[in-house]
Length: 141
Ligand SMILES: [Mn+2]
Image 1 (spheres, rainbow, N blue to C red):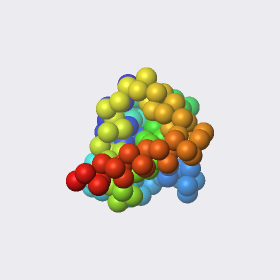
Image 2 (cartoon, rainbow, N blue to C red):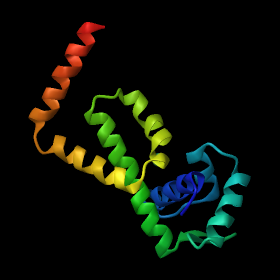
Image 3 (cartoon, rainbow, N blue to C red):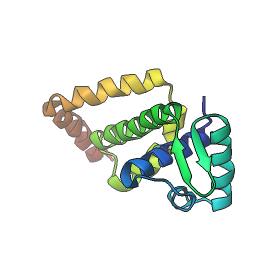
Image 4 (cartoon, helix red, strand yellow):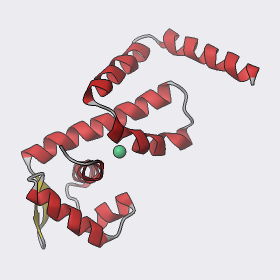
């Protein structure tokens, strides 16, 4: 299993390749707010662990194993954003909150979060009921 830091890299690399068709060390460094030398080091480790293939002058590509995990990590991030949005977390907090929790949930918990998101998405009345509770709680403050 990849470590939380490896997960962040695989997730960003997957997203960059999805969006732009390629992932350069400089783009990864910018996306993760880290120094390019840290990216090079991590990319070498990910290459060694067979998540990607890195060739200095030709860039990098994800292996099937890297792609599969990348897809799951991006799905997990987006699912948790959906959850926080549905339960009314302020937009300005959503990204950082997800970055903070995403590595610390089991895939079991992620599946259950998926059920919960589906529960709300299937009937907007449920979201309205939650908002009513939130309104009541705010009035108590
Ligand atoms: Mn993330």
